[in-house]
Image 1 (spheres, rainbow, N blue to C red):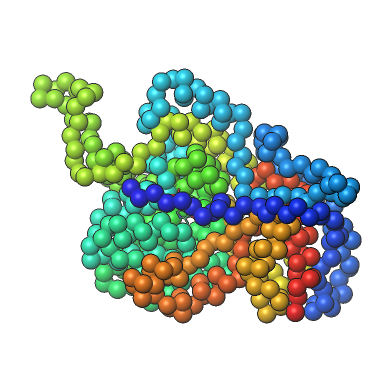
Image 2 (tube, protein in one colour; image 1 turned 180 degrees about the horizontal axis):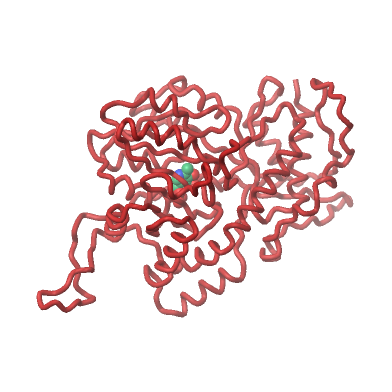
Length: 460
Ligand SMILES: Cc1ncc(COP(=O)(O)O)c(C=O)c1O
């Protein structure tokens, strides 16, 4: 199974050594001429205290940012990483117990994690694997994707999905995104369907579910299978239904920056018992241990290879972390949602910043908080904006550089930026702010204030 490294965490906070002095909280109202009341000079303090994260005490003390004084007596700059996982004593103890048990690889903890996950998502079958990349590969394989098939995938996504389609000998067909949500555009999806189309893989960007009613209707009409890439979408709902219960198969990630992490890991959720069985078989080298000997006596050493499978099983070590993390999944999600609300409220009067607005019929996991820069109002581009944030100690990232802009797809498939114009345009303006449970109210306020000061200093 090909391994990939997520770029999600790759951008860390900057390490500016210059001292930071509070600039106060001033919003660019120049163009607005708003009659509304003037903002408090220090709006940070107006973010309500209840935003304090319930998970914060679970972080180890070395994880908490400190603000030692600089030699000049000014406060040192804050350093707010793009992401920091919430690992507490329960996870450490779970790993210790698994190590002591003598059973490290796939065993009782994986089974327990799968059952807990299936219960949590309310799906019939959950198969734990080594990553979401593996989950996507195995789900598409189980659906019979192969040479001659086309799989419709978003261009605004991570490397995994298009790569595994190619590994299976099929062709990825890129679909453009909606300009605001960055989710797959159902109208563009319909335009790109051919008789060779076999599967569509909607990806719930940032944890905001796609318009699944439109996608399911298209899938029904064109006899396509639906595999959700839900790497960002635990827990999330569309129209009151949990993501994980809608598509034919749903693939989750437990990479380090996800709501629930096992370090590396993934899950295939499905209501189809045959699909679950095939995924399980192929994740374990195609090995079937359910057979008996000729005398009817089951022997633990005997197995049969049913297919040339992959090695993509989850370990008990990883699952033991996942079991503890899953218990806190709702709290993690709620903390992310509170920080998202705080960003939206804090940035609301900055006309140069467009904030995310998930639809009314969705419940987002808030895996990402992606802002879009109104570039016509700024004298700096997105990359410079990221550098300015980093110089103030604020980590950020970009999700994503669209797949069709990468050299492999340009050179192999002849993709041009204008082939998928919404994604190409959005790419120039998007950036993802820090969002994780262990943020503090002050951290979020500092990020907001830093963005406001950059906008003020660089507006047209
Ligand atoms: C949308 C999307 N799909 C798939 C993946 C792959 O996940 P994993 O690292 O678990 O393979 C990622 C990684 O972050 C992702 O962002």
